[in-house]
Structure formats: structure tokens, C-alpha cells
Image (tube, rainbow, N blue to C red):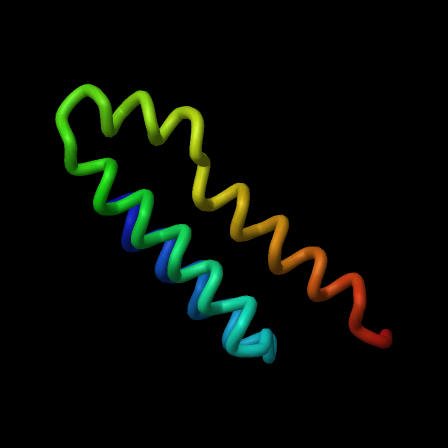
Length: 69
């Protein structure tokens, strides 16, 4: 479920017009979180520390802040 939400966030970034390098980094964060998150116990600890969705929101916000209004 968490990975589906993460992918929805990447889809929304593309809908906003985020460039490929931003969405590629976002997909990388989702992939790392999904793969390591599958490991029992250690994956849960990693999820607490890595926070892929927070990283992705930061990436998207940085890109949006640079765009002309």
C-alpha cells in the first residue's frame, strides 16, 4: 500500500510537469524503499529512517520553487 501511494506521488509530479531527472530520482527513492522494506524487521527500521515520500516531496518542492509563477 505504501509503495502504491509513493508511485501516485511520482505520477502527480509528472502531471505537474516535473522533468525526467526529478521523477527518476523519485522513482529511485521508491525502489530503494520498496526493496529494502521487504526485509523483515530491518526493512521496518529502514523505512523509519529513509522516508522516501518525504524525500520525494522535498525534491518536488525544490523543483516547483524554481519555476516561474
